[in-house]
Every structure is written in structure tokens, then in C-alpha cells.
Length: 582
Image 1 (tube, rainbow, N blue to C red):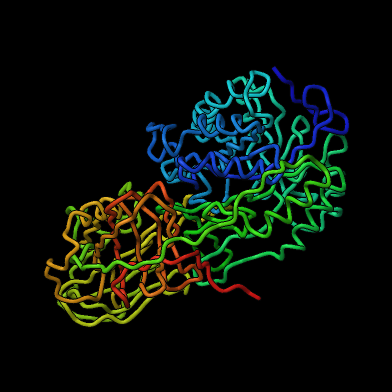
Image 2 (cartoon, rainbow, N blue to C red; image 1 turned 180 degrees about the horizontal axis):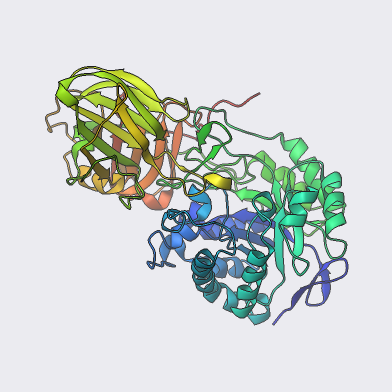
């Protein structure tokens, strides 16, 4: 067995000074059949360690329904790291941020108004149960038991949120009681307040930053006077949001910052080495006065792109690392273009009507009250005396399509700060609301989704609502059984229609689905939920991982909310993540 500890100036591996050169790969953002490939390429860039968060809401989306299999098989992911001859860092949170929906916290945990990320007893009890389950996987895989895990992080950038030392102390006690013996760390941005509030004297402080390495390390050293300096989130790129641009960082500048960091003798964890994808409905959102949901791609402008191919940044970082540590001779092969072809799509009818009877309540029921984890709820209410007027909503979370007697009226957008619009006379008002992603930080964690507060017509409250949850994945499964030959009669090609198409492949392969001529909605290949698309950009393609495809016939399903300008599934040679600021 090998020991791993913290010395006066260095990490010590088997008693010898050791520099951690790590990169982040989130197992829950990568198809499990591709984990080994991504880990191997991390080693080929010169990394000796792989770091991952643990997403609680991926493992336990409903209370008591714990899953550590398939996509959630953290143990297998750690075993693959070890098989590649590398170490592992585990960051279980419970809060992870990560631009992941709700910051990794399950909605059942955050829906009841408890003080989150605190020593509040009921919150701490749930967190303790979660961490015990994680540590059942991690503890036997620690380095001193023959496994790869060398560091475990307590919480995550807690100094940006709170200063409840009793909470951190409880997490440490639980972690040690669960058999975690490797060193414990914390991470915060290198400011005096965050570093002071986010840790304990017994924990090794690390920092998160992406530039001005010498300055940031000096601030960290003032708060961590002994032991190794470590940037455990070296930001080499950034994330994108709908309606923005695709964020990139200059390769030479990023490499120079990494060089400065390593020249100072520091250890590093590159965030991200490989970003992956927010498949399904897993994207988070930002809200600093304006709500901005994160796109499906989590490419992050990382050294390994969304499809797992090395970039110019990969080779630049590899060259830098080679100045300070051994780097394998082998280099990953260059990316080859994906197959280019198109498949016609056939409409199969209005999919937003394909749901069970909803709940009848005086006021619109939130997604949370309905215990609904998918993207949409349809709200229907009779218009009093059949009249129209000014429709006002206290808050919409996050985007709503309004119609009267089936005729579109307009939209209400949280991003635009919409609160009202004029509706015509008619019998029934219908409002289709999309949860575009839960905010992943600070006080908005766990906020309710749907129509929030009073809904009025000319100042008079509307009552007698039917709130109908729409399970996007389940509906796509039903749509997939329709024929793809255009034989299903459809009155109009506009509005929320389901579409289905077929294509053949000689063998499974990565694909890029072009969504630029579609409106807004969700796409699936062979039942695999690729994620959201939106003409709002910047992202114009969806990544289709090879394991989601098959040799022979393949089926694509599109659930469009607005209108397809071109009813084809167009597959292109490479990703198009949108315009940059340059």
C-alpha cells in the first residue's frame, strides 16, 4: 500500500515529495463507455491525477432511490482511473456548483425551505446519509488501501456562501468516521474573506483561479502558511449560456498562466480537462439580476473538446507540463470529421397534449408541488365570461408560451423580466411553462419552478387551474413508435409538434446534429436524450456520442416547441458552438 500525506512544503507520496498535476472529468457528463478513453487522454497530456465532483441529484433524484450503477457508477470510474496508473481526487460536495442543475443538490432536498449548506439539523441529517453512501464507494478505493484516491474535498467554495464552521466541522467528523483517511481539502477563490470563511484549521486550503497565478498563490499562502500550494480549479476556459457567445480563452495566455503556476512549485487541477455535455435536462443557470440558463454543451474550451478530441490547448498544456514532469511519448491521434448526411423528419402530431390529466387547484401548482422533475408543465384555466384582458403573472420560471383556445398569443420570459401581456377573448387560457435549468449557486438554490404567485386578468385573480406535468423523455419514447414515412396526418407544421426520422450507419460513431434551422426543443437518438436545442444560440449542434448510435437503423426524435424551419435532421462534420467575442 502507498501513503499520501501533506508535508511541511509538499504533498508526500510514499514519503517522497510529489506534485499533483490533475484534470477534471465529470463522470456524469460523459457516456460511461467513453470514460476510459477520456482518462487515457488525460494521462497522455501529462496528468498524473483525475478529479471529479459527485452529483448528488444524479445519484438520488428522488429521496431514498439511490443509484450508483451505469452513468452513476462512481466506483467503476475510479477503478478506470487506477487502471490507467493515475490517482484520483473526489469532491462530493454536497454542493458542487459546476453549472449543473441546482448545484448538484436534489430538488426534494431544497424544496422545503430549510437553511441549505448549514448545520441546521434536518439538512445535516440528509447530507450525512448522502455522504455515507458516497464514502462507502470511496473509502475502499483510497491509496492507503490499494486504490487511486489521494484527496477528498470538504464542501465546495463555501466561503462564497457562508461561514458556518459547525457545518464544516460536522462534515469533517462524518468524513473521518466513514473511514476517509487521506488528506482533506477545501477550495475557495483567493480573497481574504472567502479563504477565511470557507475552511477550518484542520483542512488544507486550496484556491480556484485562472490567471495572475503568482498574485493568487501569494494570497493563498497567507492563509495556508505550510504545506503545498495548490490551485484545485485552474480555469482554462468558461461555460456558455443561451443568448450569449461561445467563450474561449487564448491558448498561449492559458499555457503561460499554467507555466507560471507550475514554475512556482504549485500543484494544479485543470478545470476542465474534458467538460463533456449537459445531456438531458441537467444544465444549470446563472442569475445575477438576469436569468441565464446554461447551454447543453459543456465543452468549456477545455484541452479535450466535447467529443473527447485533443485541441491546440491540449498540445500547449502538454508542452508546459513536460517542463516539470514526465510526459508519455504517445500523443492522441488527431480528430477525424464525423459523417455528414441528412434524414427527413416526419411530423407526428402535437406532443404537448400527450399527457395524463393534471391536478385541479385554485392556483397554478409549481413543478415542486407536483413533484415533477421534467421540463414542462401545462397550465389551463377557463377565462371568466369568455373575456380577454391584461394577463399578469407575479413571476414566471422560466419561459412560458401563452395561448387562448389553442391560438398562440405570445411568450413570457424570465430572462426578459416579462410579467404581463394582453390576451384576446376566448373560452380557455393555456400557459405552457418550461423549467430552463435551476440556478446552481447562492440563495437561488432550490427555488420553485412554474407560475409563481398570483395570476390575474385585469387585476382579478384567475382560479380553477389544471396543472398538467409533461415528462419530455416519456413523451419522446411514445413519439419514437410513430412511422417515419410521413403517413401520420398533421394539420399544420407549426407549433409544438413531434418529429421522427431514421438513418443508417455502418457502425456506431460520434455525430453532430445541426439544430440551427430548428426553433426550440429537445432531441433524442435511439432513446438517448441528447439535450436541449434553441435557435437563440450560441450552440448550433448537439453532440451524439458513438455509444448512443447503432450499426444499421437509427431513429431520431425531435420535440419542437415552436417551429422547424427545415424538417430534416442534418448531421455535420464537427461541432459548431457559436460565435466568439473575437
